[in-house]
Image 1 (cartoon, helix red, strand yellow):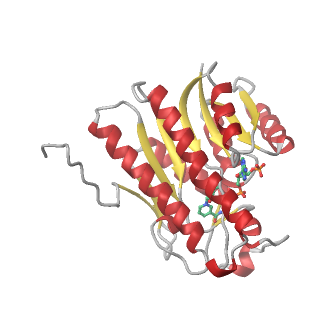
Image 2: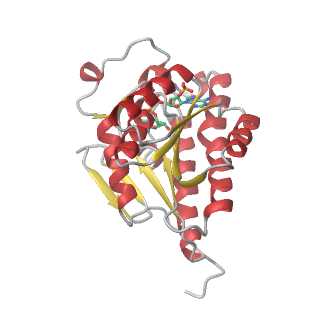
Image 3: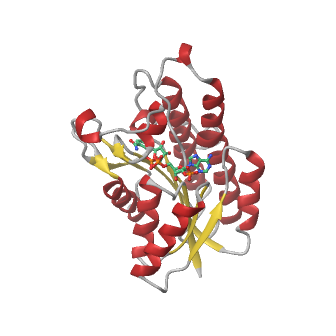
Length: 254
Ligand code: NAP
């Protein structure tokens, strides 16, 4: 029995990603703070396929003790894929930041993702077929006005994950590390980023993807040998690419 871990599975891209892996018969471990939403996800998956196991783990991943506790609680399972999807955004000028929100965003988007990626790589880098997929953003490759700090967190995700992918390849490791970089995607993201109760994607945006579409792009990335899956912010086409950032290995003879 092998498992796919998906953080931030209680809504949006993570919820649909759990459904998409389950539709392939993969057992899933779903993580978020809202247990009720995770229970509904489990019910939905079991309604489609009773043979898929769904393990629910509640954790606030902006708290580092809970990040380590989550990983420790998964020692009894054999993991195959880890998707670091939990994250949120913030739209305002840097001079207007609510620093409590920003601290939480840095801890979730960067600290938790780094700790969980490192622990997973430590234990599974040499296991055949393992993959780490970290969710960045188009804003992890282009700085977007009014979202500078959020974009900086996602530049970190892109750089860290591309670098890890290069490092694993250089070591001849079996694990693959990959970055998914969505553009606007219908989910709870906009409400949380803008601190509003309602957000109408059709009225506000000329183009966007649904979370279901994004989960299927994630599976395209999972199935490919490429490191980056990125949505073009103008055309909204999805492209699979080699690493985008320059990478130097000063210890290599190449
Ligand atoms: P979403 O619907 O708001 O989902 C965010 C998920 O993260 C939820 O399951 C939420 O669960 C979880 N989460 C938030 N805070 C958490 C915490 N402290 N501890 C544990 N889990 C936490 O938004 P989404 O669009 O699907 O976002 C998924 C990822 O895509 C994020 O990393 C986001 O930055 C990235 N992304 C989104 C877009 C977009 O336009 N939607 C574009 C580019 C990148 P709980 O609240 O239940 O904890």
